[in-house]
Image 1 (cartoon, one colour):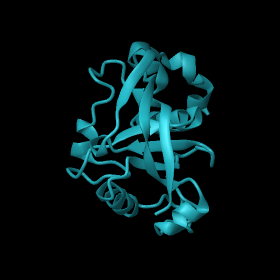
Image 2 (cartoon, helix red, strand yellow):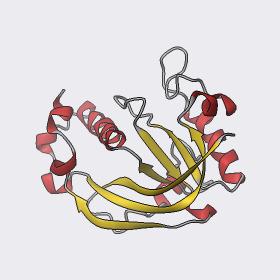
Image 3 (cartoon, helix red, strand yellow):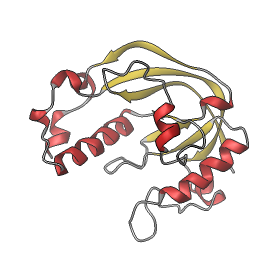
Image 4 (cartoon, one colour):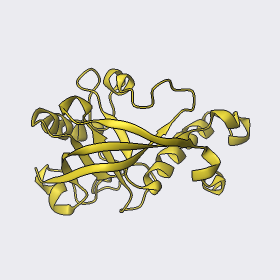
Length: 184
C-alpha cells in the first residue's frame, strides 16, 4: 500500500436533523464502499466540494427514480454541508495510478475496464487491510457518478486513533449546491 498524510478540513454531507453528524453507527451497521457491514466504523468525508456535490447528486438521482422530485422535498430537509477538522494521520493513497495499482484496483478507478463501477467487495478488502494496518483511512477519488478525477474523498477510520470535530456552522443546501445540477 502506498500511503499519504491526511488531516485538516474536510466536509461532511449531512441531513439537517442528524443529532451527531460525526456518528458512524450507520456506516458500521450498513457498511459502505470501504467497510463491510458490522466490521468497523467509517466516517465518510469529502475533500473537495465537487465530491460533496457528486454524492448529493447521486442521492437525489436515486430519489428521482422513485418519482420524488426536488420540488417535492422539504427545503429545510435538504442536505447541509458541515466542515470537519480531522487530526493528522496516515491513509492509503488511492488518488494516483501507482496507489491504485499497489492495492490491485484499476487505474481507471472508480470505474473498471468495462466502464462499470468497481464493486464494493474489491474496495472493502482494501479498506479491511488498511484498517487492520492501523492506518487512519483511505484517501480516494470520488466514486459518485459525475465526479471529476480531482474530486476526492476521505474514508476516515475514527477507531484507529485521531480526532474529528465539527467546525463552523452548517452551510444550507442553497449555499453550496447548484440547483441546476439536480435538474440536468
